[in-house]
Length: 403
Image 1: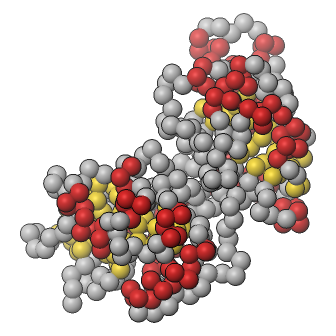
Image 2: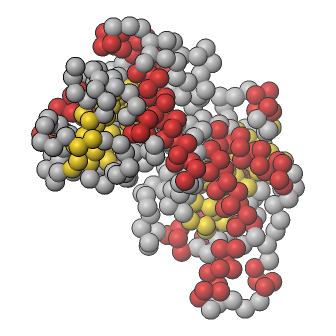
Image 3: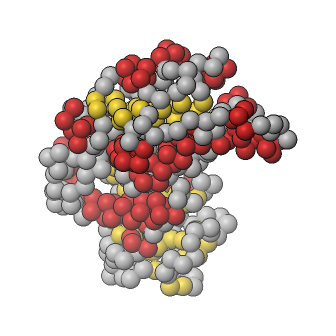
C-alpha cells in the first residue's frame, strides 16, 4: 500500500500529529531550507490537497490528517518553482488565502497559476472573500470555487458594532486628544447615542443579517438594507427593510458595507454616493478594499460631508502609516482584523476542512461561489475519481452580495 506523506513545513503548528520517518521517502514539497517529514496512517493518497504556508486555517491539517486517502502538500511562498512544480501539477484541491496582500501574487489562483495545475478541481478560500481567485478563469476551466462564508460572521458583525459605538461616542477622538495632550473639556467631544437611529446595510448576507439582528435588538434601530439579490420578504426575515442604495445613503445614520468585492461592487461607493450621505452620518466597512473609493472618502471627510468613518479594509493592506485617511481623528482604523478572533479562526478552519473533504468525497457542498461551473466540474471530477459528485443544493447558500 502506498505511503501517505503529510508534509509539515517550518513554521506550521508543531502539534500536528506525525511520525518521524528518518531519511525514508522524499517529497517535492520540501523546501531547500528543510522541514519535518512524517507519515499519516497508510493509505492510497488518491486525493491531493495543496496549501501554502503560513496560510493554514486552524485545525485544517488535523482534520485532513484523519483521512488515509487525502495527502496534504504544503509549500512556502518562497519555495522554488522547480520544487513546487510537481506539487502543483498533482493537486486536486487548493486551499488558499482570501487576503490578496498576504499571499504572494504568483500563488493567486490566476490563469498563470492554473496553467501549472492541470488536475485542479477545487479552489477553496480560507475566508468569505475570494480576492485571490480569478473566478471567471476557474469557471472556464471547470474548477469549482468555494469559500467559508459565514464562518466569521459573528466576529465581523461585532467589529461593525464596535466601530459604530466608537464613532458615535467619539472614543477615538477623545483617546487621541488625551494621548497628545490636546484634551481641554469634555463638551468638545460631545457624542450621540446609537439607540433608535437608522443603520443602512449594503449586503444582507451572513455578516449583514447579524449586524441587522444586533442593531435591531440591542439599540432598537431602524434597519434598512440594499441587496439586489434578495426580495423584500427574505430581507424582512433577515431583519431589514429593502430599499435602493441611494435611498439608504440619504437616510441612514450609519452605513455598513458587508458585501464581497465583485465586478459589480468595485468602486460602488464613490464621490457621488458619499455626497448623498447626511453630514452627521458615519461610513463603516469591514468588507473589502476597492468597494469604496478612498480618495473620494478622504475628500468627503475633508469637506465635512460626513461625520467620520470606521475602516477595516483598504486598497493596500495594511495601509502605509502616511495614508491620508489615517490623519483624521474621526476615522477608526484597523488592518483587516474584523474576522480575526480565536473563535472565528477555529470555526473557519473546521468549515474549510470539512467542506473540502465533502467536496473530494463527492458529497454536497453549499458555499459555492461559481455554481454555473457545475456541469463541467462534474465531468472533470468523474473523470478523475471515477464517480459523479452529488449536485449542489437546489437553493445553495450563496448570492452575489453574500459575505
